[in-house]
Image 1 (tube, rainbow, N blue to C red):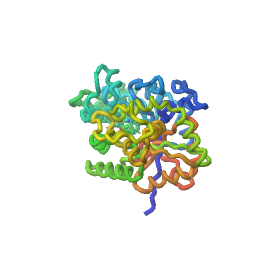
Image 2 (cartoon, rainbow, N blue to C red; image 1 turned 30 degrees about the vertical axis):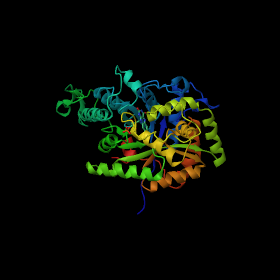
Image 3 (cartoon, protein in one colour; image 1 turned 135 degrees about the vertical axis):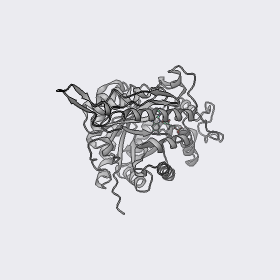
Image 4 (tube, protein in one colour; image 1 turned 60 degrees about the horizontal axis):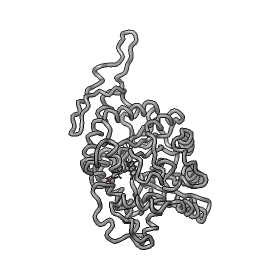
Length: 432
Ligand SMILES: Cc1cc2nc3c(=O)[nH]c(=O)nc-3n(C[C@H](O)[C@H](O)[C@H](O)COP(=O)(O)O)c2cc1C
């Protein structure tokens, strides 16, 4: 059977890129992330290249060791609203946490972004996992892992009800009679969930997409159940084909189990591309980035991720055997499994694992020429591991541009990445 699917691509942006030390590269402007020009430049490059969407991550705290690592982050809504004004086609997906915001605020902001962008908004739904975030909202620690997901379901149910509170044709302003909308087509919501309520209706008319695109990245049991129920696109950290295939199958079958069409739940593994005219040049670029990583800082981050104190561990020996045996239940369960899995599978020393974390946070690291990277993407796409990729350039904008120059033309030649069609993001992703 001919595969008529199109490989979808999002450009993911965390700060100046996904490499921990990217801000120290000779070409980087370490202060760029608070400059609107930086965001506009990336948005215009991505849109011109044909990416489906920009995806902005977000964490609601200055992270541990922030004096050694760029972790400041402006509000994605503000950035995406500004980008809506200078772009016309690319999707605008922003991260917002269900743990610290009211569903009315969330529904209203995403509906507003969807209107001003003419149907290009997406919400990366996160539950947050970092105690520093909890402390910024008056809590001592994050609520328990599965309770966060229960709250997320409640918040998203309320947001969906609020988006639907206006029927699509409710507004028929009649200047002659003075009737602005048909009151029979704007409804109360009366959402009364365990975690909060909203009477409704929303004070923003039905968003152009009906419902902004919902993205999600949890991979624990609770996270997968949530994704199967709500997500249009699922971001995932996968570093091997077989694990990616098993995740893909699992989410698609869970979607079918809850009565959804599995083809309408798109799976996007993250890929960290370092593309160059030759393999040697790509590897040299990775080595250069890694040479800027501050090992003690990355060690502290890994300890935090794994819930294990690694400060005294031997850097040039394998990861201590006991690490990862008992996955800390309150943190990002999937990330722990991925990182420990990479270390054990590739027989990495602790130092090598630290550099893997610094360079790609455990995502698929693709270092090579345009054709070798395109081969990997095509293989994953055609072998049940991916419907698209979250392209996480390690250093912005240089590695995004290298991906555009070296990898994209090959994907296009192979008819894998073609310009998307449709009037809004949902249609362009084939989800309508
Ligand atoms: C590609 C990707 C991007 C993510 N971006 C964010 C983010 O921007 N902010 C955030 O708080 N969490 C982010 N997460 C974390 C997830 O939202 C989720 O909390 C995490 O994967 C743990 O879920 P789990 O415990 O169900 O595995 C991201 C995860 C992945 C895989």
